[in-house]
Image (cartoon, rainbow, N blue to C red; front, side, top):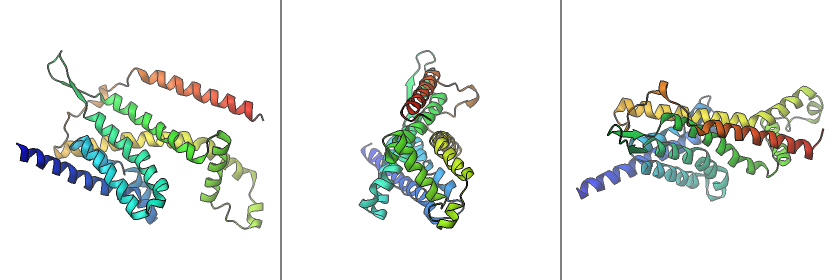
Length: 257
């Protein structure tokens, strides 16, 4: 019995290490500049989810740690804040948490069976994590709204190669381009949060399907047609709308047109 337990621990560790290596590789794939780089980046949480749901959340946790250590070794300690922290907060931790929740279960006295964590609640958490990651990223661009917008605008101008243009070309930049950048500054945070939510749900579904086909899924495949969001969803949405309106009012007071 003891040897079986040790074998299980070794297997969990190896699965976690392999999943972490795969997740780190997918995370740095945009550096290759290939057309599929963005797609590979979007599925970076998938190996961690497969390890966490197919084996245990400990395997997912080992995967996150392995990926973080591997990225630190490759890019160096000096790049820890710019590489490892975004990976852990944006990809590793959310994937591990979703994998942990997916395996939560409790005894149902009414049926005598097992009641698994609802699929609708997993969808809710996917959305919450997508928004939470964006909230964590915002302070890296500025601690106040004006600084955040200014920094994000510079990043977008650099990405669009507007700052590298010669003075003559820069002078020809018309108001439409400025309005386009202003539009990107306004929509980038909510768009990034929405993309993160969709990406979390997509990777969670892919991990479940892969494990279901391979026979490693440790919980029954849920009936997605009957899945419902938790009752707190409406309250969370109302709070988010109220906070957004309060932020707009505060911005208008501090920076009137």
